[in-house]
Image (tube, rainbow, N blue to C red; front, side, top):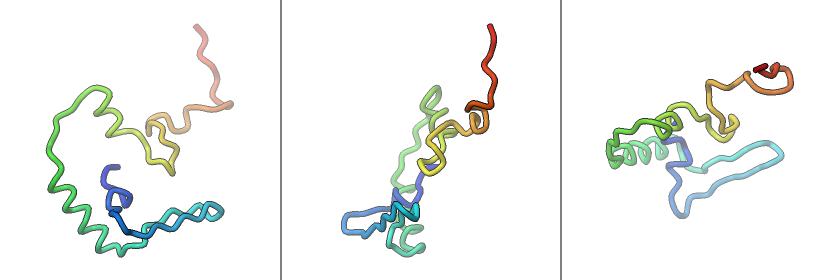
Length: 85
């Protein structure tokens, strides 16, 4: 997903990182984040893409979800049998 909270980070913002709790939080109000993201969206030029870039933009999960393609979730691991040729 484009324009998540990290896109709204600006110089001087405080960010809380607590590895034990799995927390990464921007210390800015939800209203300020929404406002910043709207500004970013208006500044974003429309770029028609295709190929791998479009595939990446539409289907790669966020970091907290594994940075993998969304259509591969549940299709990997030891419990998935290998393909025979």
